[in-house]
Image 1 (tube, helix red, strand yellow):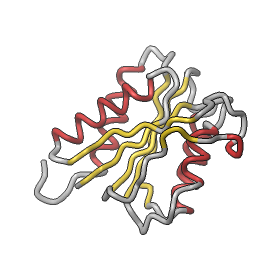
Image 2 (cartoon, one colour):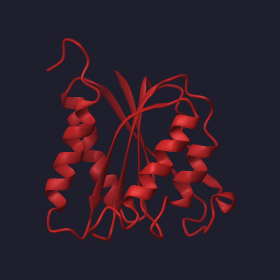
Image 3 (cartoon, one colour):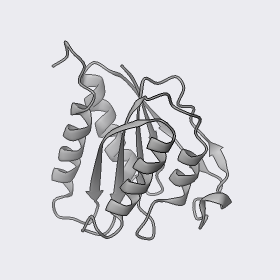
Image 4 (tube, one colour):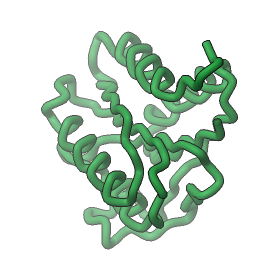
Length: 161
């Protein structure tokens, strides 16, 4: 399966999780590719203020994984703007993950994932799963491992381990 990992990152934390996930998917036999969403101004406060330097095309992929950091206890305006401008996705399978500084998922992670998943569903994507990694948590490594395991399991095809 050709899987696109479409990632927005500011500090590199989200990208590092995506790299681990991409490698796990490749080891599983998928053609997984990392692509970066780049905004002209990462500090834009609202999605309508976001313009893009790099805006990955989802059409070449059979499945999609979106990742972004939480910002201000909510969905990051850059990923929100990106997802909102996507064309209809014709029921492609998808997954989402977020990274966040605060330790508890209810401190923005749950809300960000709910919003990301809702936009994806509105675009016709079939969201199969989601994960949160808290960067300040002492269990960060376990959260990354759990999130990678959960998401890669969503894309096991018949005949694959």
